[in-house]
Image (cartoon, rainbow, N blue to C red; front, side, top):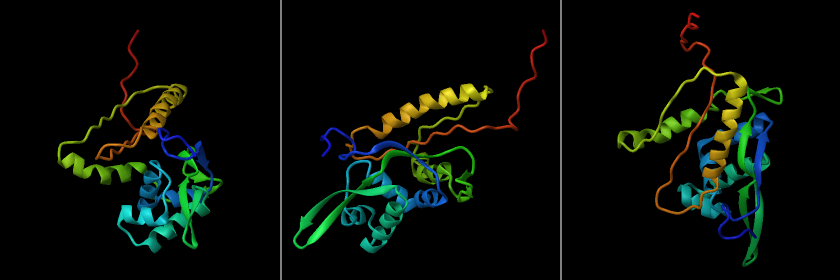
Length: 191
């Protein structure tokens, strides 16, 4: 078993690329992304997850099965309780990512797969309460520089994922880098 200081409390891969539409659809559901978020803290049973999300155990079991079938969750340990073997589920990786483009393995990704849409919905209450921290910037840079910048951002994402879970408030963290071909630019300076 993993040490108490490790988040989560089980061994997992650092990253896994989602290569099928089934995998992307599996993480596109808001309840399933909540389950994945909870499992960043520690492994949990379906009963514990159902209590945390205040949904029926059968509903949560269905969503856990979808994530498990897609290779996104796995059983990380079991425990015998009376005559029943209780399964503790954990993430297969700390971070999942979809490669560039709107296709995975030649299959179109779901049109509603957009983390920014989820973040916009989640952040509305914080914005209304004056607690939202955000910014947007634009820079005209070459693709190579954008890729190098994203590598540094990826390090910050991993750092955020590994923070010990404590405190009373859950914070969302959204980041993105996207091309804007129609954004206005200044003409070159006259020499």
